[in-house]
Length: 114
Image 1: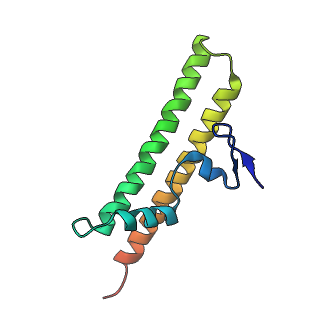
Image 2: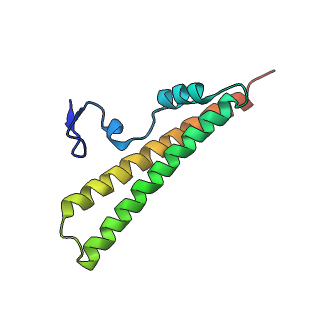
């Protein structure tokens, strides 16, 4: 199923693509491209994950600002509020899932027998 991205007018098949956050595979690819002789791969992956957290924080802030605008009467568009809240919710769910995956991988590495 494809969705219309209201910001760009393009059809998007994956709703996560509309959030402008990187998936796990994209983080790995991004980190591999960024890693050079002086910068390690882990640092690049960590930096990409922090970028996703910053994006999530931006969406949460935008949703809060829309709520404040509607409460103060500066905006009458409940549509914008619903979109901001859904983006924030989806980005937060994705970030928490990513965090859980990282913790699970860390625990698996720690529990390995040497």
